[in-house]
Length: 217
Image 1 (cartoon, rainbow, N blue to C red):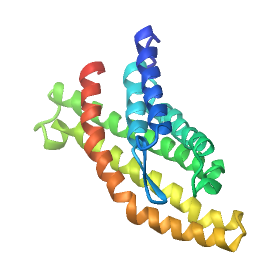
Image 2 (image 1 turned 90 degrees about the horizontal axis):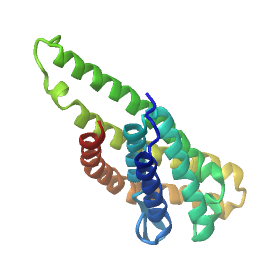
Image 3 (image 1 turned 120 degrees about the horizontal axis):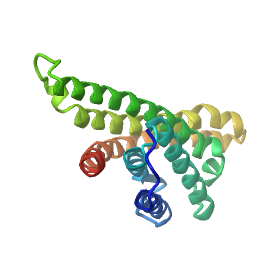
Image 4 (image 1 turned 90 degrees about the vertical axis):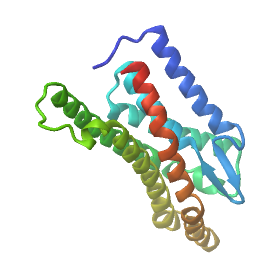
C-alpha cells in the first residue's frame, strides 16, 4: 500500500538517490577501476534504494526495482559519457548500459516482492499459531530472503550485461577488432568482477535491509 509522501519520506529517498549518484560519479567510489575493468558497488545501492523506497513510501517492490534499475542504467550511461574510458564505445549504447540494468531491476523487484509476500504470510501464521512448529526458515525468513535477493541481483546484473555484450555486441559492431574486444572483455569481467561483487552484495545488503526493517517496518 502506498504511504503518504511526507517530507521525511521524500528526504530519505532523495538522499539515497544523491548517494547513488555520488557513488556513480566520484572516481574509485562506486566503480573501482582495476586496469581496464571496473569493480562496481552500485548494484548494492540499487538493492538498498529499491528496499528503502518500498519500506518508506510503500511502493510495490516490482515498481521500486524497476525505478532503481532504470536509475542504475541511466547513471552508468551518464558516467561513461562524462568519464569515457576504453569501454566507452560499448556503454554509450543504452542497449549495453541501460537495458540490462532495467531488466535486472524488474526481475529482482519481482523476486523480492514474492519473497517478501512469503515472509509476511509465514510471520502471520506463526503469530496466529497456525504453524505447529516455528521452523528455522520462518524465524529467519527475511534474513535468508535478503541473501537470496542480493545474490540474484549480482548474478542477473552480470548475466545480462555480459550476455548482451557477448551475443549482441559483435552483431552491432562489425569492426573485427571491436568484435574481438567484446568477447575478450566479457571473459575478463566474468573472471575478475563477478565473485567480489557477489560476495560484497551478500555481505553488505542483508544487514542494511535488516536495519531498514527495524526503522520502518
